[in-house]
Length: 107
Image (cartoon, rainbow, N blue to C red):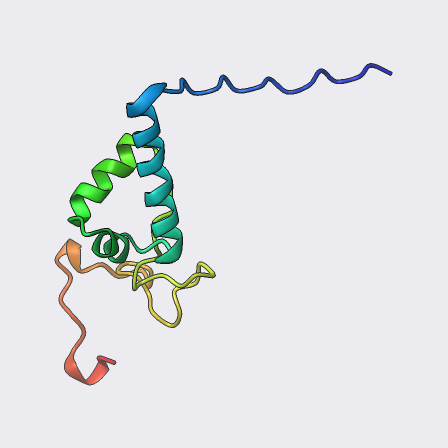
């Protein structure tokens, strides 16, 4: 029986040396820690860091900080949508020019 070869090891990302590398690493770790403390909420993390949210997002891209996007108000954490239906899920679409239901049938 043949032994499977070990999976390929990803190439390590290039490390910056010296002062600038240390500062970049510090910023990356500070952003990660603040985001974790804020529960992934980028707005609260930016406020805690004293930054504008858009600048925090730019720093996250620059330092490759990955935090999953928070679920929107229309989504639940378990992937369900509660009792609500997205437009078009019930077979009708108002985008096609169909009139809305009469007031007596509205929920």
